[in-house]
View 1 (tube, rainbow, N blue to C red):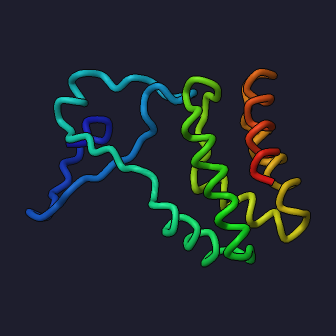
View 2: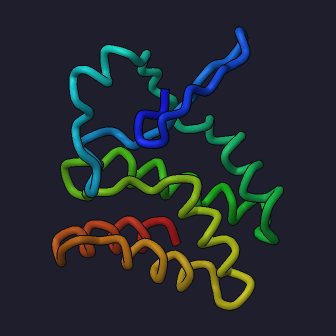
Amino acid sequence: ELTEKGEVVDVHEDFTFVGTMNPPHHPGTKQMNDALMGRLIPIEVPYLEDDAEAGLIQSRTNVTSQQADTLVDMAQDLRSSYPREISTPCTPRELLKIAEMADMMDLQSATRMVLLSMADSETEKDAVEKRIDMAF
């Protein structure tokens, strides 16, 4: 029932609603209220396996297999430091941005540009830069 419009939407008997959200501890997100949470079944979706994530990056960009592996290894290192040292983990979306930007600049510069723009503090920037330097 859409109370704002005074409409009732008839749904198919096989209708399923699927929604997504970042965990509530991610910056910019909020805890979902208990009434809504009681109506949902949360399913945590892990990151892709390393080979699958590297394959995804390669299939959508022009980076080499070695470059894709380097990005995934660095992302895993960053993810392991979340949330202690960094406030936002490196997702496949950021890796794809980096790989796309590598068409215009070297991969390390693209990595710095994308990941440092996400850092919230100087301490976090230092932690990210350290991992970029280790990766390249």
